[in-house]
Amino acid sequence: MTIRTFLQTVWWSLLFSLGLGTSAAQTLSVAVVPQFLPEQIFRDWTPVLKEVSKLTGLDLQLKVYASIPAFEAAFLNGEPDVVYLNPYHAVMAKKAAGYTPLLRDDATRLTALLVVRKDSPITRLEQLDGATLAFAAPNAFTSLYMRALLTHEQKIHFKPEYVTTPGNVFRHLISGRAQAGGANRQTLAQETPELQAQLRVLYETPSVYPHPIATHPRVPAQVREALRQAFLKLGANPAFASRLLAIQIPKPVEASFKDYAPLEKLGLEKFVIINK
Image 1: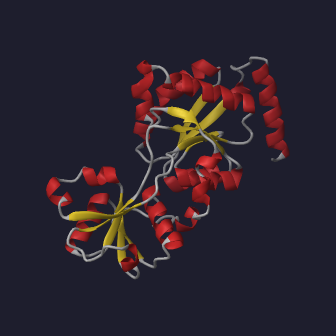
Image 2: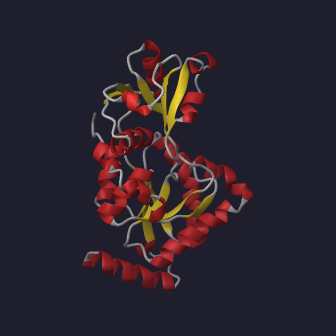
Image 3: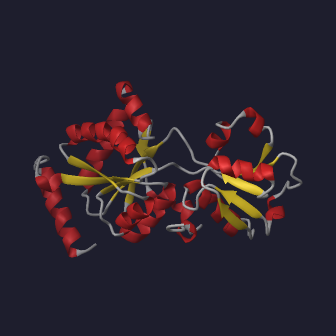
């Protein structure tokens, strides 16, 4: 912790203990991973942060970045006070700037699928050694997670091909341009029954906890706890269920880094490809 961060923490703790939640020193920046268009992020997150501000007396300011690389650069430099980020980002943020998970959703888990043509002779992962595997994008979590597991745990060497969308992944398989492809169950279920009938799930990754909300070390413990209790209170309010569902935290629960530590050994950041 730098001297500046230490002094900020002490100052914020003093103000919060005195109940001075409206002080400018109690303004917190909240950065959300730009996995959707900015207007959608503002639409979904603004009412939630407004309500949390009311409950805590904090001034929560939403920050939306133009791209995932810009968002990554910001949290790696420790710029936002609070971040909502994907599971592999949680590991990167902890290593780089000490961000600690605060909350996550407890209603869902994330997995990735590896799909082949239904008539493919491939029935075991080791048969994919040297094969071409299609993925929608290099930096999507399901893509990173699958590639890391295949590389580090299954010891499989393969050629990744990035084809822009999940639909293109499936069509690459059907046309024979790739031997297998990575996606998730939701995107596969959105395809037509005719297309789904031509595919077979070869492998599904172990499930991981979903995106957490995390805070920088300069955010005092009292402020972290106030934020946590505010989200938990909203989670217990049925009238606010649709708002939390919109930000993908329908059932908020306390989180810690141990929820994401299993991903650390995979070195997911090694598979990040910037501007490709």
